[in-house]
Length: 420
Image (cartoon, rainbow, N blue to C red):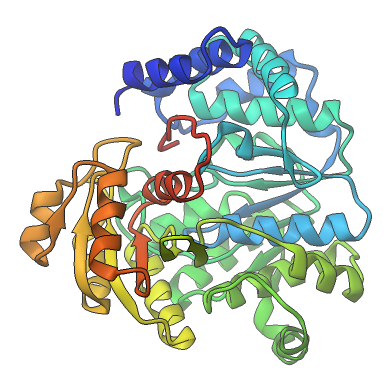
């Protein structure tokens, strides 16, 4: 969907509302993309009297799993009695999901006010830079004790990396994604991820391949960060997770490992960790929805590493998929993903997600036969007709597709998706 169509959707959904107007102004900045570089953010943070310095920060990067890890850390911190902020991207249904106070998205009035100020202070910022500044302002205004910040893309030049210090930094894993921006090798990508390390600050490293791990360790030593690996606590972690709930999906175990170590470094006790993990919610990631017309499994896997993790989780859970609903962005390695996912289902339906240029459903169907749908509503209807009320429909390939499907299945309001 183009920017003009996005703006028309926002305006028509909430005609006459101040929030519609401010979101329209924000969406007008979409063409600037997710600009890499910190000069603009440094300038506006100075102009805004440095809201990013008024609370402690946990900064989380990684190719996959960083949003889930952020959600778990925030939930554990809240269970420990801290007033929390959570900043993540992209949103599934509503833009307000990106900026949360004590686990709840900003209400319309607060979101409107903070976005108006961010747009005014940062007149030349991109969409993502404006959203990041708004998050800093909201967290400062609400007096949070701890903000958990998810990196948007890469790390070194990401808008969130304007922060001068953090209590803990973490990198969940490194795999191929965003190669047009971060580089075509795991080494180049790892260098970008390692850029969130800070001198004298713990850097928690999740389970990852030897090559990117060595690069991150090298970069962290140069920066002067304190490296902390989850494997040094394997026995302790395994015993803990055997007794306590966490987010569903086999792949969440590795993310929970990172979140647990981060929480430990924050001084959060085991009771609060267990309580926070049990209460943590992160929609659209191995999320099962039992709707009146049948069951759906939504997962935001959007690159080969994520698809492989999804397949492993489905196998471990012994989930039998009747129909795959798949859609992806054109710039993603959708063919590799589809080669892993297509054999899971007896039937497939392909659709174009909104957000930015999608892969052509006809081209996808040429690789693995399946039906093509006009839109997400049509795709879900076709999938349910094939699956019957008793079959499981898997929706995956793009977070934007998952967000659209979730809104349709649950009857939720939705702001236009933005791939930023």
